[in-house]
Length: 96
Image 1 (cartoon, rainbow, N blue to C red):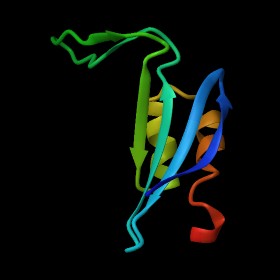
Image 2: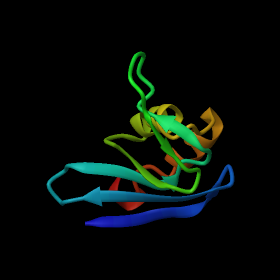
Image 3: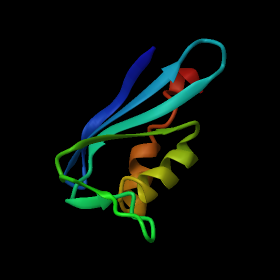
């Protein structure tokens, strides 16, 4: 079951951090936010990507807070500081 463990605004973008714990030891983290700026997704040399609006919703999934930081920077275009701030909420204390 997904449980919200943080909700706020980071770098001017709405951010909801959720934790999934199915009880068997497998957990996931998910950030729901928006793209933050108009951009092209799928920017691969020789391939045309598709445009997304700053307000289009996106989510980033990870298995650890560290992986979440990396993906928030690479896929979510958050600064290092903002990504770390979001991920510090990581696993909720009662589940650590």
